[in-house]
Image 1 (cartoon, rainbow, N blue to C red):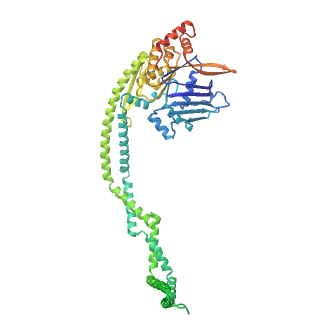
Image 2 (image 1 turned 30 degrees about the vertical axis):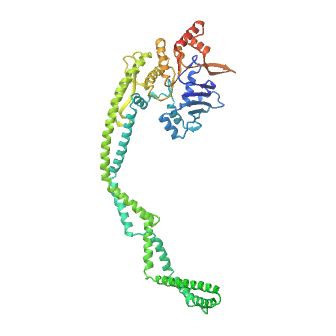
Image 3 (image 1 turned 90 degrees about the vertical axis):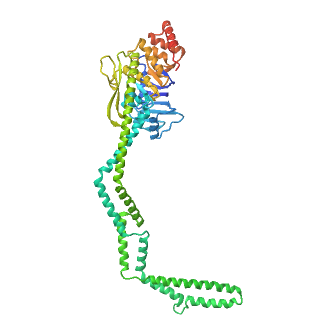
Length: 559
């Protein structure tokens, strides 16, 4: 519900804050006092068009803030807020709109700067303004269909049809994908098969490239390696120049230490250590002999190694940065070829599923359509009767349901029509020109849809145009009934409507420091009686005050 509305520097308003109540709220005041300015400001903060002419003082921007209590946001509102990462804190949602004197406009939701289009989407879920304004959700065919289904208890059936159609479309896209790419598919299979064969014929092994590079390095440096190995072996066993070989020197030292060991056991330990070193020298020498044997190669081996590395490099340029990447590509390509091979089976399965899904969706949509027709007839009867009670004699409401191809909404196109007078052909609600007329139609619809309509706040502007006598009482009763399930705000000149309200606000103009400004006062007790008296008689007198007191006692709403 709308909790607080604050308007600053807008039209005739300098700085105004109004706290609205739950249930039925009315705004009354002299013609031209600024009642519609307040509704215009509310419409602005709900995403309506901005007009720089409404900026009161050109030295600063106009600003409108609206605080809503939203304990249970609608599914659509929840999704909008989630999409834009907006959190409702303590059940409150604050909308703000600023207009600069130059005509620039900014919109905020809970302090987050957002496009005005998003503000409008959020506003559509919070308030319906009925009169000469934009926020009239019931004029939108998609909203009409949603309300018809809600009124008839067909929400779940409509959701099920939408889900079935979504699956049907998904299958259709997948099938079209398979059927429309046959020629391309054959080319793709041929190309992948050639690539797989090319990789397989190379008979690659993980780690092979590193081995080949190592072998190439050995072959290229074979002469130097052989020379160094020979020198190392000579140092160990033959000696260099006049120096003893390492092995011989080690053996001589070991003999001396063993002899010393006979004199002192500590020398025996040292002799054992040298014996261990001698074993290591023999092992190293054996490994050198082995490496020398492996250095032998035929003259063509280096060419073969280089050719193999070139072949591997060519494959790397095509399929990956390493042999492992090439083999991974081969695995992926083989899986794709296998999947293509299974295409016919998958196509047959999907076609069968689509046929079954189509049959199910069509049956569900037909059943939903029948329920909609029954609901439409019931709705036509109830709304038409309510219109009669609201003074639209000869008015007739009609729900037009036209068949369409199966879609997310089923097989129906819905539109609400109205014939305002006897003999007139019903026409779309969007074409109803009179503000008072459309307000009463909306009141009738809102009353009938009270349980199905989830928009919490309803604003009625000009609902009393051309209304008086018994019709005024009927309009008041309908508003009071509607206010039991929705916060309702109404601008009125009719005392019967004002007397029903739980909260009464008086809109008035006053002149201060040579400037005229619009203000609002909450009326209670004596002040309210005097305002009702003014509405009854145009002035406050003993007679009108008595009539006002009697009317309030008779009609005061418990809302």
